[in-house]
Amino acid sequence: MWKGFLAGLVVANGFEWVAHKYILHGTHRAGKPRYSPVPDSMKSHWEHHREVRKTDFHDQGYVEGISNWRTKNEIISLAVVAGVFGTAFYPVSKGMSLAVLYCAGNYYYIHRRAHLEPEWAMKRIPWHYDHHMNSNQDANWCVTKPWFDYILGTRVISAPELQEANPLGIALPQVLSDSLNWAVSRIRPAKWVEKKAERLENAAA
Image 1 (cartoon, helix red, strand yellow):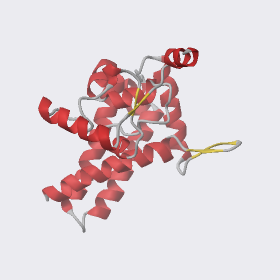
Image 2 (cartoon, rainbow, N blue to C red):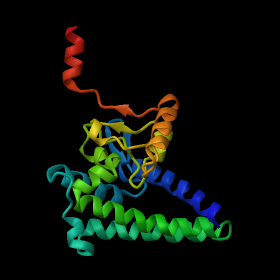
Image 3 (spheres, helix red, strand yellow):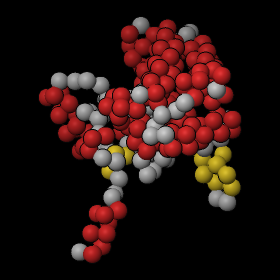
Image 4 (cartoon, rainbow, N blue to C red):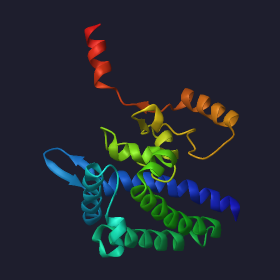
C-alpha cells in the first residue's frame, strides 16, 4: 500500500510537469499560436499568468471561487484527472490510486493558497513563484514539489532567496539538505537566471 502510494506521488509529480508544459502552456509552433490538446485549459492558464503578473502573484479568481470560470475549470480538470487515473490505477495498486486522489486535492490546495498568500508561496514553493515572476515563464513546471524540474533540468532560479532548501522541497535536517544539495549539484544542478547587469559586465571585460 505505502510503496504504491509513494510511487503514485512520483508519478503525479511527473504528470504535473507534463500537463503544465504541454497542456496548460502549450507547445510552440513556428508562425502559429501555441498548441494544446485542451485549448480551454491553455486559455484559462494564460489568463491566470497575465493576472498574477499584474498583481504581484495574487489571483482574485481564487477569492471568487467557482463563480470564476478559471477556478471552475481548474477544479473540473483536477476532478477529471483524479477520476480517470484513480480508476485506472486501482486494479494495479490501491496505494497509487489513493495517491492520485491525494495529489489532486493537494495540488488545488497548494496552488490556491499560493496565489492568495504570495509571501507564503515565496517561502514554501519558491519554484512556482519563479515560474510566474521569473523572466522565463517556460520553466519551473512543477507546482507542489520541484522533483521533475530537477530531474529534467527545468528548475531555473531567479534569486538566492527563491532557492528551496533542497531539491525535494521538503523540510529536512540541515545535514541531509546539504548532502542532497551537494549530490544534486554534481548530477543535475538547477539553472540560474543570467542577470542583465552581469551580461553587460562580462561583455565589457
